[in-house]
Image 1: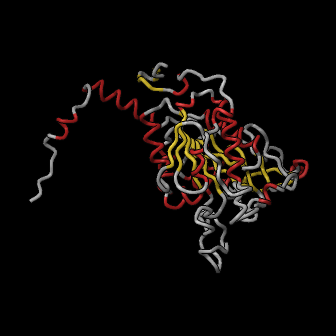
Image 2: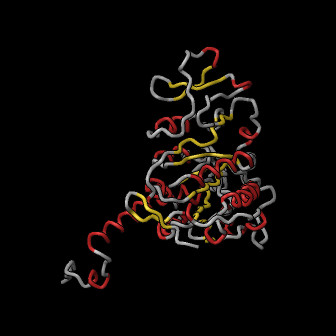
Image 3: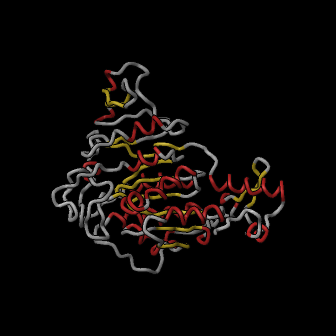
Length: 355
């Protein structure tokens, strides 16, 4: 195996694309020998199966795939995938993954996290990994509850949610994970559903092909502490609640695709019957817009009752990844002054005197 070095704008950059392909791998090759242990009916089983079935299509050697997780039910996933992996610290998986991705650009680095892990104690790590555009893929399993610690409300629980820690109903306004990621200007943002394997696989593929940080929210059912939280979305075939986004296609939803979207007077998107719309006023989905305002407006269609819920890729734009910029900066520094001298730096004149 060569080191995967290529030239770009005069700089030497490592690239996963230059790692020799590992054709011939199958789903079974990515199943570990560990017993999968989640509650019966947990949506994590479906996500794990889709992820394991997706990985052979990357044609990346197992030793070049790393799965990093934090703490929570979702974070058990690295045990069940036969690659390198790490069950790390609560909320800190993006930080550990950042170190891997920047020091080893030949790796395919995946972060597995949950709504509590990523959006509570890990909130800062998440947003900074996204804004820096570190070349990692983040899967956030959102079940709108703390499952591992037995049913407390989470940062995505709806207002009024009665749980063990909010017996009179939650007073907190919940995070919208997609809006949060877009607010951090993530270069790739998507959403899928645990039970829609075909859709989830397509989103995983798009994230893998993206150079930079990719954020995927996955609606995931917790049958023990928050069962059927996403039932309106899963049972909404033809009802108009689910809006499937496809790049380059007109946004249509509802029975027979009779409803479209247009911009309102203040920039928000509003549904309108296609038959009543002014020609040219209805939007065609475009994931490549440099300004995230449109994608953000899509994310604001969400509501607690899932009246209109977009799924698919919201945004996918080209922007230099953090690891490529870091490699270029190191090359520039070496070109100007050669390799650094750590001993000279430690013994240098820039010191503090404490009296």
